[in-house]
Length: 263
Image: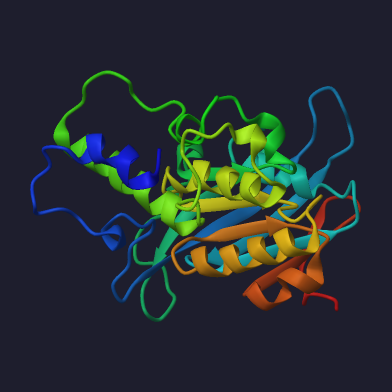
């Protein structure tokens, strides 16, 4: 089944006055803008005395690409898990701050809800659950009849995700596990993009891929960063450096410092 056939039942009966993708994109702005703010965030695993993260402070403007690098075991992945709501910090906050054109706050910060965060783990293909590409992307969607506005939103989100990651060339009936490494990563991204997250987190997105698949994923990230706020943890600095708007180094002991990408 190709993408257009898969979408047609969802779109059936919708009015001709349909919304464009631009109206669905996360963190919409006019002259104002929003940014992700992490303030004084620390994490000490329960039952231990050693902190993994120590007073992390981070600010990333919407539709920007942030990169965190550092040695293995320094706490980078733990930080992503906290931002995604999978682990509760010992203290600190994660919020969305709306700012005016002069960069000053124009309203109180709002907590960044876990359901507004997408995360793609390292080797995400290991976590595929469904038997088809379409079912994998729409896993967890409501199966009962829903109102037309919700059906319209889901269909448009699905079309946006499939188009953005370049999955229109494959059958949506295909088994996700039969895809090439590069297409498995595209599918993992589509699963998150369909939720239209305010923040997209990627843990080592190029790990385990051959040179062509790595180049394809980098080009894909270059395309979707126009619409999304992306924070990446990676050791593949040279390939990702052209995309980076802001970068930090995580030092051993869980101390995060803003730093240029070392090349």
